[in-house]
Length: 254
Image (tube, one colour):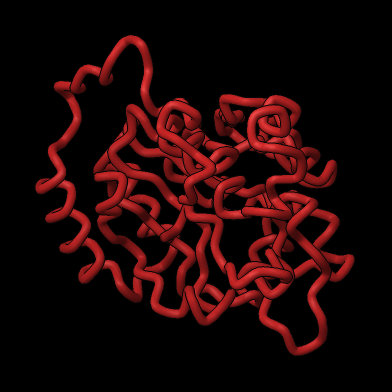
């Protein structure tokens, strides 16, 4: 995070002081042990089995996060945890096609979609940090519009699932199926880490999953519209994200 942002500007320091500890939450060392054991034991297991382990281990303290490129992960987890919370970070800069997938997932699947917004609107952010922060300092923009909202969204959960896949980019090639997210003190579950794009396509066809229309228009990976372009032949799926910067992740998965 650059000097542009302060703790107060991020909303990380509030007048009420720190949030009281939740007595029902597992401690970080217990969560770390659970994650390390599960990461070893579930490597190579089917995605549904990994999702079932998370749902049975954490119950309602487990959620799914989704960028709404498709509804695959939400559907998969809902098969073993109907009514599961699905967290969507509504940055205010999404393509309309992305918001349509979110609404379709909420309408068609047995899940509870939670749209989490940043503390500031895009206009308020422009007023405080200057217009088009995403062009000048994309890391700061992601911090404000994605990373901090995720921190708030995960309050009350011990574990969260993400749709990371090893075939998406070199930076994700070693993604574990279960790991301890030390930064957030929670277990991170990646049920489809070992899937290929062919596996995803087959699952979509088999279960009639909502899919973002932009994927059929040359976008390999979909984020906020100012920082996403179509990918070129031979590029990895995430090459169209922050293409003008030496940046490959928004900060949610680092």
